[in-house]
Length: 310
Length: 240
Image (cartoon, rainbow over all chains, first blue to last red; front, top):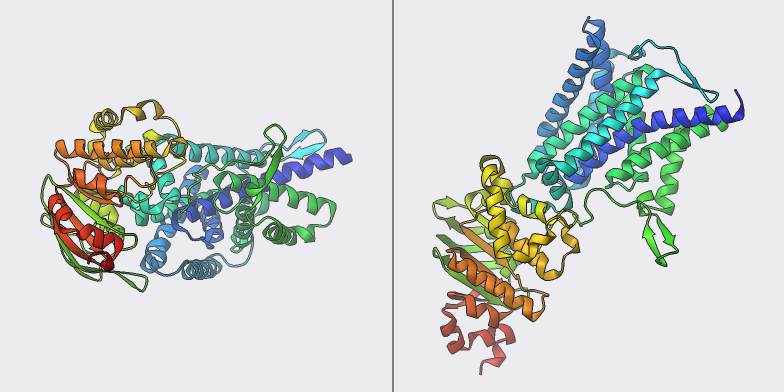
């Protein structure tokens, strides 16, 4: 494999992993925009979804129903979390609520440890096709599934926001919570929906990436953290930014692993986060570029959901 | 139809309203005047459910509004044109208007196009802007969107918080004409205004507020005769 093929290989692995980060970041950002809090238990939903799928499969359930059921399980647990832990404390400060999500994360991780133990579980790839060689790089078919999931999820989400009445109501609530309440949009119900949506999306992301990475009780911890970094990279409230941030983080990581050392993997993400927070705390979506034609600084990437204040 | 009794509201540590009472009858336009910061917006906001009262009563026909959240109150028939319009700037004018009907969307989806047409006949200038993001409109048109959005809720009582603020005199006149038209269509309106002269012309009844309380209540003629407007805006020393 030549140097060029190697770089393409890094890029492809980066985009694959980046798609997963992007999906988790998307789950975080949508929840944040609706509720004002970060669901730091998001990684545990990756774990629960994936390991439930593994267990269901080994119990004889065919692939697709097992995956659907596993995602539903994650959704039910997310709903329970919102109603039992977040809703009763909805009048508490944002910080308190975020700490509650950390508490839930620890509890869920503990439960996962009790149920599934510490050993890794394999989840076979969705199809049994041989890897594809492309420009000196190797593409594992599962990578294409991950990419496909990311593309479809993002497209569905944007279609929901742009084309449906309910999606516009959600955007309205993200843009101006009080004005949304005045027309009858119930933020408590949206909060529940946001948690369920993000939990299910995280579970899906886990099920799709597990055939590449294997599944363990703590697989979600790092993925959740990386999704968080990607969200910060994308500017925290920005849906488009979350996707760009996730892909960027995946690619940076893949190149860092390849060119420096694989031990650097998790350190790189944290370094990226610190650098972004120091240099450009509004994330890459806050970056401005100089437009020669108009002679002014312009926002590089326009925001997708609303520009109004909360 | 609306009866407010001894309403007290705390905002932060400030007693924004202290035992305020007034009534609104069906079909009338009640104007609330007063200087900045006397609690006019707090009064409207607490009727709409934004600020929970610490004491007193708000009755709307048979419903007790105290403790109800805004998303419920709009369903009971009170909708509000909030201070500074509070549109959804990135959404189109059509979306802003349609979202006004959110609380009845599921049940009355079929009649919404007719209601939208009704709002557009009131504000014909919005017809050609329907697909534009709301923030690209002029202040006057944005105010019309805000009023239209509140009307899409099909309210029995319409609360308007300073709809003329920051607008050019010509536009202010247009907005006040709209209020008059709405009144003729049978709407019941509570209108908070800084622009006393314009508001006195549309009001059936006037409340004048001093910090935290209602200091005067009567017809526009009585207000003009009593000189209490001067007191409210210029302070007691101006009375003499």
